[in-house]
Image (cartoon, rainbow, N blue to C red; front, side, top):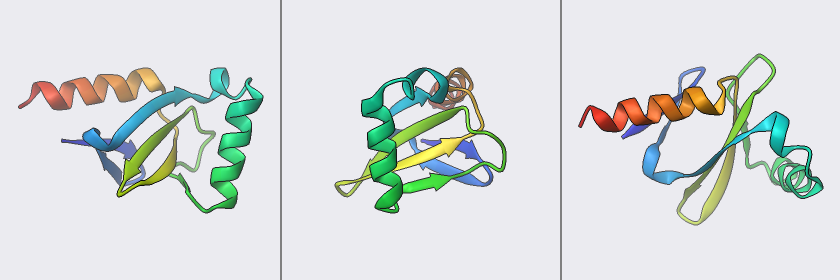
Length: 87
């Protein structure tokens, strides 16, 4: 199934490794370093024109991509559950 992240961007739910709250996770230096490295390597996709609230880590063909979304992790989780319950 697919999950809509905003700004006409969707990802396959089985490719999502994790959904993270930016306010809580960027307190850690490790997370900031990870996101900085991903940005330098061109693996960050910003799908919002607003301040992002969450980021998703997705893997496809061995490559990890970070998606920045304006939606909260709770909203994304609810959407993912609604998507899988429609099967």
